[in-house]
Structures are given as C-alpha cells and as structure tokens.
Length: 361
Image (cartoon, rainbow, N blue to C red):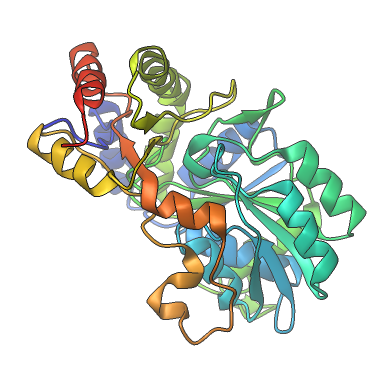
C-alpha cells in the first residue's frame, strides 16, 4: 500500500523526546522557547508563541485581536472546519467568499464583494490550502482598504511562499498546526506568529491561564500551552523541513510532467507551493469511481473536503449561505494522491502510471 501520508520521525526525534523525559521538565520550558525562536526566524516573524494545537492558536489569535461577539470574520468555505470553528469559539460569525477553483484558495474578487456588501467584518482569515499561498498582495491591499485585520491560517503551508516571502509573515497574526500529517509534524501542537509586541504578550497570557507571574492571573486565560516534548520534536522536524519540502516538490514536479489523462486536472503550478497535498480534480462526476480504482491499486488517497463548511451538519442551525459554486464543484471533484517526502521514485512512478491508466471504468 502506498500511503497518503507518513510522518518522518527517526532516531533524532526519539533521542530528543527521551532527553526531555529524563530532564523531568515536561511542560513549557527550554525546548519550547527554542522552537518558538527558531520557527519564528524561519518564517520571518518577530514572535512565535507555541500552543497546544493549530485550532487553539487560531482561537487565541482572534481573542488577542479583540474579535468577539457581534463581529464578523471573512473566510473560505473550503477548508478544514477548525478555520471557522475558531471564529465561533470567540463569539464572532464567519462570512464566506467563494474560492478560485484553480488555486483552491479564497478568491480576492469574491472577498472584496463580501467586504463591500457585509457590514461588521473586522478581519479576513485566509487559509493557504494544500500548501499553496493565497494571493497575499491582494489580501494585504484589501485589509488596508477596508481597515480590517489580516489573519493567516498556515496549518498546511510550512515554508510556502508568495513573492519570495513565507506564509505566516504577511498578516497581523498567523497560525500553524503541527498535526501528524503536516509538512512539519510533532503529533499535536501549534504556533502563533506576529511582529506585534502587544499581540504577542496578549497571546502568551491567553495560553497560560492569564499568568505573566506564576499564580498572579491578569486576565482569564486558558491551558493552551505547548509541551517540551512537542517543542523537542518540532526542533528536529524544523531542521529537516527544507529537505522534506524539496522532496514533496520533486514528487509534484514528476506528477506535473507525467500525469496526462483527459479525465484528470492536475493542480495549477506555483513556485512557492510546498504541496501539503497534491490535489487532483476528476471530471465527469467520476470521482467516486476513481477512488475505488485507487483502492484496488493499493494507492492511498484523501478527499479534502467532501462538504463545504457551511453545509456541515453541525452548522445546520446557522443562517449561512450554503451555495458557493466553485467550492461546491470542488467538493465533488477533489482527490489528493500521495506526495509525502518518504515516497520512493518507484512509488511516485507507480502512482502517476495508475492515474494515467484510469479510463473511467
């Protein structure tokens, strides 16, 4: 079986974890602080604040920005649900703009339409989906024009770039996830990035029960801290990240050059793409047939995502527009094939060959 994802943990990570365990210091400590510093330097941000997950990072980011009840946040309907849930957690409401079907990301023109027509929007949350950056020139301009905050969800874009500048370095604040399938994986954990000193200070209070001095609680906070075990693994993974992303790109370039099937649309190419996923579009309503075909060939796949967020059952009670033509089309077409950095050349060729041999039967 050629797996859709495979975390690349080795002896370096095992030794780092054992060192933390032997130290007896398992909670926030030196490893977390060093990981925060090193990852912030890699992204190009002044501050990194380690959290328990990418989801808690997003929630804290909105709280630090003062986004709350009665506010609205413009975002994409085509993403993992944590993007929108984090808005709801703080009492705000998501507002959706359709995506560009060629990039899978929120369409800047549709975003501006929403900004013009919807009062009360205080922030834009862009999601750099599948490892490809949104058009950050356009969204930076929109944030300035409409005087709203710009938040980046970088859960799938560790090292991705727009115009030579890394995802996570554009917005007022940005958030990363280190879930096992991510380009940089620690098991769980997340990170907030910002250049703003006051936002960073507020985030640190929020993740640690509102404490700057132990047992003196300045605000009501949360237990969203990163552990030293996560920090230690993160440092190991960060040292490997450029090479792992290069391997993903190498596999993607082979697919780009060699997948030739009239029933399949390969993803639009972009220099800064780091291919968290390599996501195909299957034409003629043949996606489910294609999934069965891949299973029979013992090739792993993922459908990210089978529903838009507004159509999820848990959102049924909300009065959200549920029709987004481009996003709706994608939910019926997308399928991601293996692109993780542990793939062998034979496996990459096997996957491409199988995709080419699919005839809709």
